[in-house]
Image (cartoon, rainbow, N blue to C red; front, top):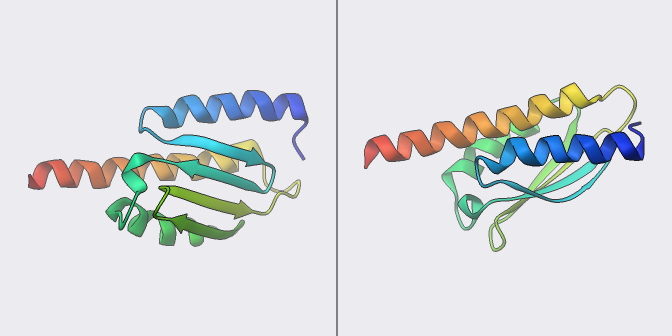
Length: 109
């Protein structure tokens, strides 16, 4: 389990990393994070790729999309087995998929 101070610094690091893609952390507690992006509203191609990729992760329990608000709720195993680097890898995957879909959309336009 991550201490509260470490959580705060970790959250700031994640927010900075994701902000380049207009992804914002709306809520975070160990085991649960809600992310939001204007790119995820409605029937988003990005979300259609993100959901199965995140759901395939062993420690992620569920991923739910709310199309009306453009949010993703990710619930994961918050045990001591899941550390900051594992969570960062998940967010890097979010960035990668987000960037790939936008790049494909731009190249097709």
